[in-house]
Length: 471
Image (cartoon, rainbow, N blue to C red):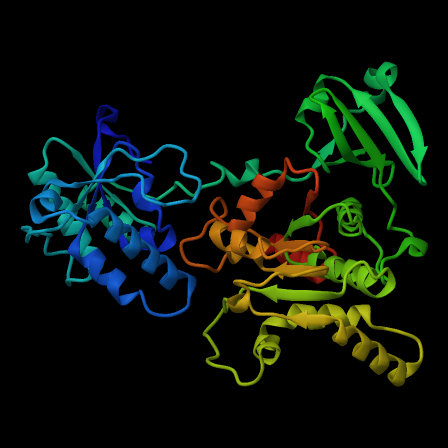
């Protein structure tokens, strides 16, 4: 963020990508004014067609602008429209009191000869430069999600900022991990306030003390080496009193989930959350090879086929290609999604190794495939999922608004599992601190029916582990 002059009212020139990313952006600048160049309106017009999330956002921006301009004449538009309280939504805490200006006349754009071409970015740069000469009473600042535009602005000496209103955290290292190590003297400090009892085969402890104020519901606690003491916060009765429960040990084969056992502490915590019907929403973060998809699928199969807690597994993910897009695909919705579901197929091979040779494997595959459905995110709007076990893979590529759209599809009896790696974001203009996955991890940590764990150790192979560390 650049330093503003005496913290006075500024005039922000918005880039098109800001409005495409967040259609409520025009309401989020508080007392500051906003300027929309004509090239931005032109780009919005080109981007309004289609069924994509960006096209929907553009159409919403157009509706907001239409509401603000309703009944205004030419003189009022030239003087700047008061950004009043229209139905913007999005949880805007402090309404804007600034004004919205449109480019109503040609400006004298004098960009240096070293900046060739007349593209949209250069037009915005020239507009900001011309405005700074006309509006000497205001600091003119470009707001853009485009890093290259901000670099060019810095080279030309034009103030430019990223749009950071959707930023969940200042630093991704502050993101809730879902796990806390207890100090070695924890029991000594809490032995006077400690109660322990058994309830339906579960071991529970009531502990009290000032350090409990930092705990969250369903947070995982551990003391010592793997398996020494591992518990989960079941209830926070007050700020300084909580009930914790010993977790099941899924490292031993007799406690395996669909033939899968946990290989480390984080995986054990993850399986406890995935197998807990009281947790409706579970998020698993971790690098490639930490076992996110395998654990989620194994827990889903165990609860759908063995326990009958859910009717079926629904698997979906964002279809963002790593390389060149492979074009349109023929077939049904599931057939179109198949190329994106390589992780599902790979993990099903691990989970379907029954006795009985080829015939037994084929029978198991048929049974499993009848209870697993692959759905596209494009057809989620308006649906309600009842008694489903939903796995959303590659969730780091979704915006906060898209995450809200998907999670609110959950009906009674549904469990929603989000998987992702925030260091591998492929969606343009999303970062680790603005990803929808980061957003839900931070917002759900206080809710007692949600759980989160960050998987730290790769368990794919020694080759994959070495490559993750050294490449």
